[in-house]
Length: 433
Ligand SMILES: Cc1cc2nc3c(=O)[nH]c(=O)nc-3n(C[C@H](O)[C@H](O)[C@H](O)COP(=O)(O)OP(=O)(O)OC[C@H]3O[C@@H](n4cnc5c(N)ncnc54)[C@H](O)[C@@H]3O)c2cc1C
Image (cartoon, rainbow, N blue to C red; front, side, top):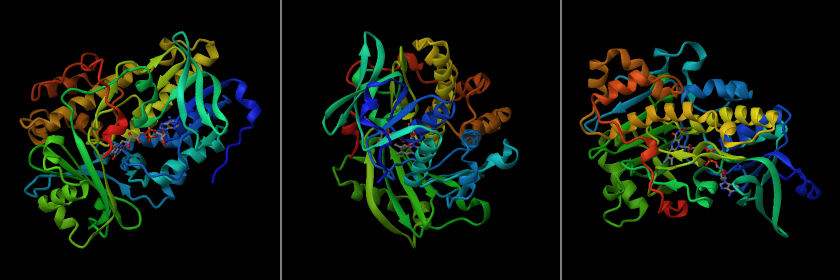
């Protein structure tokens, strides 16, 4: 078990940054700031390694992993290398894979399929090595405020609640969305109501050569899809994403529904013909949510604590690591200027939201029965590159031409600012099956 390095007397002194959650976002942010000499503490409620879903990286994480100093470890890891993404239609027709080398030169054109328990532990250990204090098995109960400014966190400790003072509080609690729930900021994303069930197989088929580590998306009728993600030790992650009204009508147990969907998807079944399912079927009733405010005086959200839209383009880990790096830059500026206002802490947000918006539009287009990637690429050949940019995560840049082209084939969803009901925020616990 990894023990805290913290001495009890330190609890009254002030940290520069208190991070809620030691997942990829929290670990990356704490590591970057600690390396710069900032006093950071990370509170992680569980003990690592712990299970987590979300195994497919996109290539645009390459630069972040390199800047974090983790590229050598990734190259030496047992994680399958991923060079491409392929879509397979319900009748088994395979589209030409999108190879990342079409838009990215050299080493950065491949990425990895990661086992999250070991990947997340590597990141959190790295944050420790860079000087962050990490306290595992310590959950944050609430964020403390003076007026509207966050001033620290309250943690559960053996002797009752303990107060930790910090100049900046970072919510990296993932789907726990601690600040979003505490301040009632969390809401649904209209038009994105998808549920998911997933499990793991040993012995699923792997394609030859550089396709062995690809993500394959098997489309199913009715607008849903399966992911097929090869992992180390001959394990494959397989999950279905579909409308909850479609998945859950019969009231069957998750295993029964999952096996039913696998058996209905013939091209997927061919890959699993000699495979055995290992471990439980897990699931979420509702995947998408977002917060109508993602920073304030003295606090900022990163990663899944900000928002989660849909796993179709595997952008979650990229957004967690990317928002961590961008937020770390703003926090460093804010601490240097002794001004932790929302305006300074959230200076990275407009560009990031703009990039997320391009991905969100492509998510809506994917679920629009009238939209076709093939027809889009034929009608707007100059946009094929932007299409791949969305698949690799290279979206924090001007994507206006792409959005305009997309709007000609699929009506754009309502602006993010309009799309959040201010009440009835879903409770994350109730989303889990
Ligand atoms: C079905 C599904 C499939 C997905 N597939 C992919 C994929 O293929 N590729 C991809 O990139 N992404 C995928 N994702 C998304 C990915 O899982 C997340 O985007 C990613 O884990 C976000 O990282 P994070 O650091 O923000 O949060 P997390 O990884 O969730 O880490 C948050 C941490 O905070 C801790 N925590 C929570 N509350 C507290 C508290 N109160 N106090 C202390 N600690 C706390 C948790 O224990 C956890 O360790 C998928 C998601 C889903 C739901």
